[in-house]
Amino acid sequence: MNYSRNSKIFSKGNIQEIFHTSFKNIVSAVEAENENYLLNVNEQNYIEHLANKYSFDCPEIHYEKVYADSYEDDIPAEWFPPSYYVVSGKKYKKQVIQFFIPCSGNTSLLFYTPINSFFMDSGSFEIRGETLIAEYINYNDDAKSIRENYQSDKNHIQRIAENLITDIERFNLMLEGYIKSLLQQRKQKLLSQNNLLSSLGIPLRKNENVTSTFSVPKPQLREKIIVKPTVTEKGFKPEPTLDDDNYQKILKLINDVGKNFERMPSLFKDKGEEDLRDHILMVLDPNFESGSASGETFNKTGKTDIQLRHNSSVVFIGECKFWSGEKNYLSTIDQLLGYLTWRDTKGSIIVFVKQKDITAIIEKVKNETPKHQNFLGFTNKSDENWFNYRFHINGDTNREVKLAVQLYHLAK
Image 1 (cartoon, helix red, strand yellow):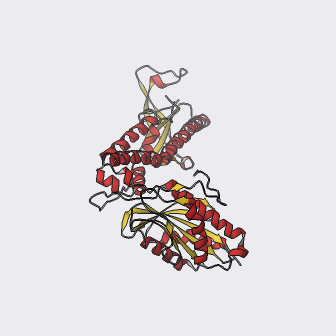
Image 2 (spheres, rainbow, N blue to C red):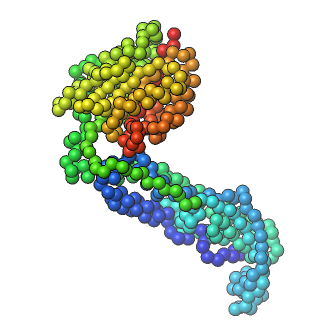
Image 3 (tube, one colour):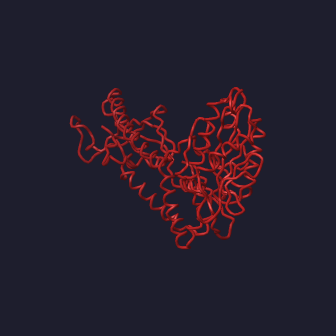
């Protein structure tokens, strides 16, 4: 009873074929990049650029907007039910009932079956542009039968389409991780070839001889507008960086100290910024020993900051401030960024809150931080009071700063 032409839904193969092609294209794109570009570009921006370029706009089928129409067509005698008296080789005019379901997104993906499905029967449905169309020949003026056939076919393709869309969403979600792995492998290869790896890290080691009150656990379809990140530097210069593992250990120690402030407010409520800074420094300094090749250590160079320096430049800075409004908070970010010149430097703004409602202050931090002119993005939340962000240093979006904002309640 169904009547269908070309372009049937789920008819061109498995969506895995499309995914494999995209993976190959991503590998080719990363391998083709200029060495200087890859070593200088802001890594996260480049990852997001490729993920945006190679992700798929999920198709969406708007079943609730279905509408019907009909037309007459010449139907071959061979298509008629056996009960009809027709002459083989001839055609007879019959009414054809059409059901139209609008679609949006990348509708071309509807030609493919989900990953774990093959040779799907698509019933009467075919794709024409941004519309799914099912056609049924009206042999017996039986509206109920036609409606039941449409409903059965619709339910069938809906189940398959839902699985297909789930596969596409999963592909999109894993793209950034896949690209990051490729990019880091390519960069490591380039750095090894140029004998640069040894100069990129500051070898902080955990001092196992220190008895610490604070534990340090192991770190746990429309056409897309694609804007590729630009690089202005003409050559890559090796620069030291604090590795992520040690950065997280430093932040964890700061968080432990801050929670200790909250647990014993009577001891700390009347302390000033410098006193609180010194207490944090007193815990940080003995828990890490400087690298064997240089004399880096934690030190205080300003009124409220804690710094870890390499030669003349800062690779980590912690800035201690009492909360005194959104304007001063953004100024603190300015102050911190003003110290930094290296690529991939790291820092923390440690905010002491004397106001009674710390929840309101946390909301202000979440709302105001993205307004800063150097803001690149929110990374994650490590605790209810600890937020991790990405910024860039003044004048260069490729030189990224990892910045934690950690808030502690010192109410009177």
